[in-house]
Length: 577
Image (cartoon, rainbow, N blue to C red):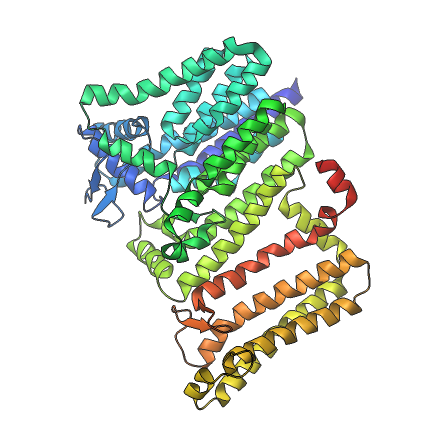
C-alpha cells in the first residue's frame, strides 16, 4: 500500500511540475505569425466578425507589427475557442494583453496534460506519460508556440479509446471534433474505417462515418448558418490546405522554395499534390494488408509529412504521439527509440527553423521579432539558415524512412555506427575534410588571383569547347575523384566497406566545397552568398546560394551511407520481398 501511495504521489508531482513548466512559459511567448493570428481572430470573432477575412493590427492586443494578416485556415471551431478566450479575458476587467495570451494558451496546455493523464491511465506505462509530459518538443509546441495541435491530438486519442471500447458513433464524433480543430486527422479516417470493417464488419464503419460526418459538418454549417457568413474565405483557406504554393517548414522539399519560379507549372502542380497520391496508394495497400490501427495511422501521417511541400513543425507531434502509444501497447523498444529520436530531431528542426527560438520571445520584445526577421532575410545568414534547415529536414526524412521500413530510428543508427567506427577511422575522415577544404580553397584563391584578363579566360575555347575556367573546374573535380578512388583502393575491407568509404569521402569533399565558397568570397572581398551566378562547366551555372545549400545539406546523407551494408545485404532483400 505504501508503495502504491508513493507511486501515486510521485505521479501527481510529475504532473504538477509539467503543468508549472508550461504555465511559466505561456504568457510571454508565442509564434509571431500563428499565435498572433489566434490573438486577432479571437477578438474579431468575439465581436461578431467572420473569421475568414483579413485581420488588422490591433494595438491593444497585437504583438506582431504586421498591419494585415490572413486568418485561420481551419474550420470555425478553433476561432470560437479563441473567441471564448477573449470573452473570458474581457470579463476579468484587467486589460493586459499578456493575460489574454495566457488564457488562449490554456486550451493547448490542458489538452497536452490531459493527453498525459490518458496515457497514464489507459496505457499503464510510466515511461509513456513521462516521455509525453517532459518532452521539450511538445512543451515548445503547446505552451511556447501556442499551436492547436495538442487539442486535436487529445480528441484523436479519445476517438481511439472509444473505438477500442466499441463506442463507434462516439469515436467518429470525437474524430470529427479533432478534424474540426485542425484538418490533419481527416487523412486518418480511411485507415480507421478500413480497420473497423475488418474488426467489426460494416456496421461499425457506418457508425464511425456517421459520427464523424455529422460532428464535422455541423461544426462548420452551424456557425455559417447562424451568422450568415460568406463561404468564399473558408473555401479559399480549404483549397490552400490541399494544394500549397510554397515549400518549407520541415519538408525535405523546402529547398525548392529557392527555385520555385523556375519549376514548370505542371510539375509544380504534381509536386503540390504528391502527398495525396502517396496516401491514396497506401490506402490501397491497407485493403489487402492487415496492419494494427496505431501502425497504420503512424504510417499515414509519416507518408503525408514525407511527401508534402510544406509541413509545419507541430505536425511532428502526431508522429511522436503514435510512437509513444505504440510503445504503450506493445512495450516495444523500437517504438520507444522511435519516439525519442523523433523528439530530438524535431527539437533540432524546431530550433533551426525558428532562428534559435528567438522569434518566440516576440510578445515581450520587438528586438526579438526584428532580429528574427533580419536574420531570416539578410545575406549570408538567410542562406546559412536555409542550408541548416535543409540538412536537418533531410535527417528527419531519413528517420521517417526508418518508420516506413520498420527499421531502427536514425539517431540510434548513428550511435551504433559511431560505436563500431574506430577512432583512427574518424581521425582519417577528419584529416581528409581539413585537407580537402584547405587544398580547394588554396587552389581557388591562387588560380583566380593569377587571372588578369577575365575576357580572355571566359571567351576563348580550350578543351571540348570550354573556356579556361570550365577546364580548371573539370580538372579540379577529376583530381578530387582520383584522390578519393586512390584512398578507397588502399582501404582494407570487403567491397561494401570500400563503397561506403568512397561515398563518405565524396560527400565530405562536396561539403568541404560548399564551406569553401563563402570563405573564398570573404577572402576575395566579395559579397558572401548574395545571389551571384557561379560558372561550373561549359554553360552550366548555379546561384551561389543554391550551391551552398545543396553542398552543405549533402552531409545529411552520411547516416544513410552508414547503413548501406544492411541495404544491399541478401537477407534484407529477402525480408522486403
